[in-house]
Image (cartoon, rainbow, N blue to C red):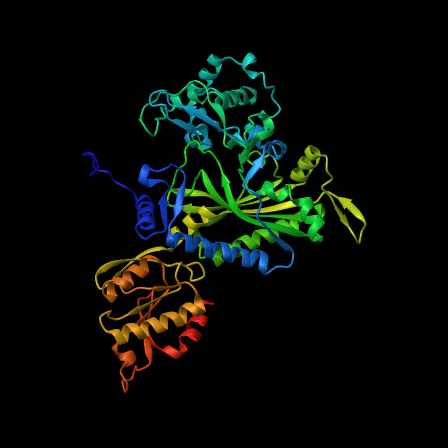
Length: 524
């Protein structure tokens, strides 16, 4: 019950609520500034969330940088000047369409309110797919409002009359992009906050970058932005890397770092954020080899997904059509994941061509080229970009790992995390904490394992059953318990510890002297 009303949720909504609750209660993720009411779209990673996050980052660096001979790591500045972001197109074009609810003042992204399937239904577009329309719209004069009246658009929409000659439909479609209020009212779309249909007549483009001024000056030369993506830091350092490292094509530059987007409506926990973290690679290639390199990196991203423990049955490759790709992309494949709130983008793989280097070369009046020392050929390298959002990855991992089963008639919750990313690999406990000799031996075992495996937890809070459940909920793969039998000379289990497995809840005895070898094998 909520405010006198019964709220029913489907299984996916319940799963999302459970993940959010677990994340807070077990120290994974907190809303930033919660003490003061919180900030939308910004989150803090708690003790366990930080460990999980760093395990993923370290694994990514190991796979894509340390285990390769063609990759260079970069850590570029978060603050970027206006000139490079103007050259890249972000200052003029990094925006989302926004419409305001006149009743409550809430601003919404129009693409969150309108989707193509709804539009097809309302306009009865059986003859022409909407993607064809969007593509053809690019050739229409921007003065369309002078030749196409609002009344005619409304008539087409409300009476569902669209000419199959396509021109009228194209104009209506463009009209919808500029004035989505007509369409939203036609389907009686309600504001998510106030539940009213009271849309403003016009949508506006809202630039997503966070702007600041550097130093005491307030002129345009001091204008800067928090970077909207990590990629531009790689492109503007292309010449520095060429001059200092002298790489041979193909080669890549990898970077993990924060990016900032002033999202109109951040939503779905850590999925759509204003402060986010990206793991990106810009891989520089000869233009003739782009198709083979693209397929190679697609396979690499699938291998990465499996390595970190994603549910591969929930991962989908989606080829992005020409009309829906970013302006710089000549081919894009999105890896979409079945989140509790629907199938949404997790990773992206884009063939950016030479767009970025050419734009920065023109703006900076600097040649950004590559000369093949064997063929003596000089050209602008093309770029394959595997892009992975770290926060979205964490949410996908939690959704994949969240598991409920039943033990002895009681529901048990555990995170079936891959040991490679689990915050703690092992938890060590004394069976009881009021027997000094047991506690001392457990401490010795803890130190032994901690020195070898690093992320090992000490847990002596509550009885051993409660410890097991607590460790299950945070995804610890193994628990080691030192008990009476461990120290009772003559007992069959003397010198052994009890090893409890998270996923099966089964237990076995392993010699203390063999624990390092045992876990080296299990955790590899």
